[in-house]
Amino acid sequence: MASEIYLIDGSAFIYRAFHAVAPLTNSSGFQTNAVFGFVNMLKRLLNERSPEFIAVAFDSRGPVFRHAMYGDYKANRPSMPEELAGQIPYIKEAVGALGIKSYEEQGIEADDIIGSAVRQLTERGYQVIIVSGDKDLLQLVTENVQMWDPMNDRLMDRQAIEKKYQVGPEQLLDCFALTGDSSDNVPGVPGIGPKTSAKLINEFGTLENLYEQVDSLKKSKMKQNLIENREKAFLSRDLIRLKLDVDIPAELDGYRVGEADNERLRTLYSELGFTRLLKEVSSAEQIPEDGFILVTDDASLKELEKHLGSAQILAVDTETTSLDSRTTGVVGISLSTGKKQCWYLPLGHLDESGTPLSPQLSRESVRKVLQPFLQSEKLAKLGHNLKFDYAVLKHGLGIELGGPLIDTMVAAHLVEPVRRSFKLDDLCLDLDLKLTSFAAVTDGDKRADA
Image (cartoon, rainbow, N blue to C red; front, side, top):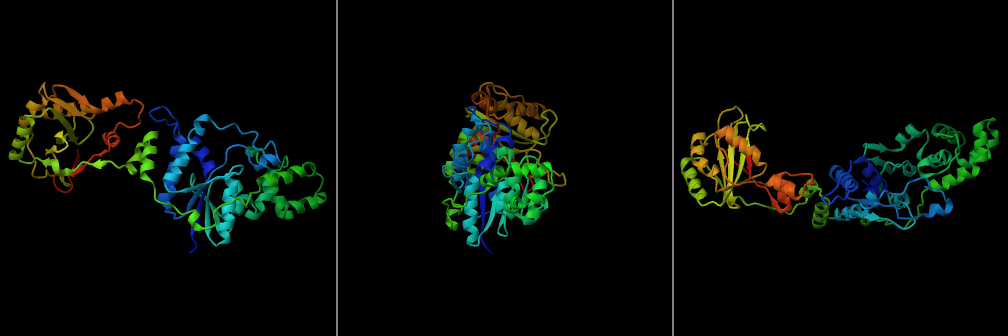
């Protein structure tokens, strides 16, 4: 089977991501939605299709060769918003960090880079998937070329083009020359839309044949428009026609996906505040489990009591059956006085049939040991969303937390109020730490984080 190469219309997707994704900002207020949307589009392609060969084409800045042909080319387009322009370097950095090659050339548009790549690659027998929603690129579709729009998961091949436009891909250029393109300020012939252009090209075959036989058309406003706008029709075709001689690699190595540079990605995602993406490339060290102790009998509970007697600070977390802190059942309690001093006390784990698992501690024995420490006015208690654990312990075990209470969720909000996630595991990643889960009792149990 011939190798498949994916050619991505980068510039088009930059705009689409910018408008499709709600405005996002990082902690410094820098807008990031275009980067986020673009990166997720690339990751979807990588994850769903596992391509071996990809390249992204970008427009160059400033005028292109088409402006020399027609000074008003794209004259109706507003300038790029500053919030988007500032994101483009980050998008290009993300592409490179993901191991994907990108191409651009001064005075050339992304469509022309893609067209030139398609010409060279198909001549060598490769299959090409153009990743875009731009109709101008449909003129490149052949038996070896398809266009896929991941935004709506639409694949355009010859049959799809013939169904939508009523002409074959090789006739689209002449059809588009007649209809023009308002988005690019390509004039076309006034009054001629897609249906009429398809009818004319199907009847006459080409734009040249249409104008050679234009006198055979019956008198009408359309005929008059065709005659009066002959120059515009051929100019429009020249503007829409893709340049196919851009210097672009012809061999597969120019499109081969390399290894992702996780260090670059971590730096980029951290700066932009992409917490979820950062987890995927995190270098955070997982806390070792050698200091985790499962307390299931009176002897180990007594050892815990001795250790807590010299504690300076005590981290507290409860495992519960629901998020209603007043009525929830207490499944277990996690305690820690340091990285290698962590305990889990199982109280209410059940198997699939609802039968209590064994061994577990009684509520009364746990209350008797922990109450003096948890209610101590001198021992500081640390927790994440501590008010939840405060209410759970009070209503579930009759223990009311005392002493200095330190809530890391509140602290994180005070330090960085604009961050999007205050989850404990996300905050730990900022410190290059990864929460460790461990089995509290036997199979089917609830798991505790430390």
